[in-house]
Image 1 (cartoon, one colour):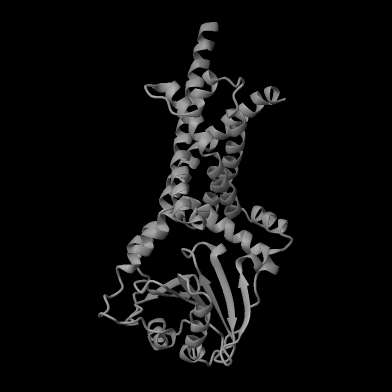
Image 2 (cartoon, one colour):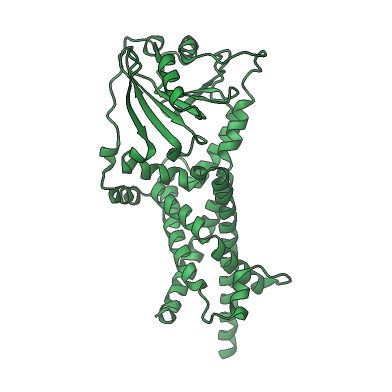
Length: 378
């Protein structure tokens, strides 16, 4: 059966590879850079925090409230995030923007390490839509999305084509590990097969999650597998009291935070959903991971008046649709799996770029050989 399918799969693999090669190489190179975004930007933001006096403690959220109001003006944050490490700035999420504050002085640090974050934002735009603007952005997204789907097909067909016709060591060795001293076509053939074998799983994860980001129908299909819809996965939001100041809305949150910390002593990051008024309960998420690992998050709803824990929601109890979206988003960069995942995502991205390059060169060698045969037969 495989022997009959092999020619069709080979030509499908070759045609898709040649058509999508340049885009795939671009996606892999930019993807390798984006795999380093989290540790680099976090380190850069820490450099902006002032050096506190010995024994100084960070300001509490309620003590920070006046500084937040002064730094944000009439812009109300939806979330406030603080880290276990006192060198981490406090992050106020305003719409899709982030404004950071010094945890010791309350001084606004603006958007944080703007230069470093601007670089990675530019890489992200190139990764998603070739950094095109205006109406051309839609064209860039379409090309990237099509290449991502093509990459899924390349990984799957490549895995099948890797299977040797005969399971002998002399046949398996050239496609199982790197061989020294090879040049030209032999070297490209060896690299292409070895990298395809050892990196097929992380490359498939990157490709499938990338397709889920690029296409709503892929994302909705994965969410539907969980038995939900996008609408059912979104929590209902409570309208904010326009007359309540931020200081009033944060009244009593310090005690609520202490209640959650007592339950989650190993937390590394806390995210407070800013309540809409001065009386409603507050939602606090304790994160035991790097901030991009949703499986290590636990959400609490705390009554500010009684400090009663109204609800505790660990990751496994979240709606399946929300969990699937988290896997798509943070699995694509490897951040979901910590430093090892980010390193593997970077390695797979570099390997994917080499696969794209060697695939093109192998196709070129095949084309040249075909031309020579035509000339000799003519």
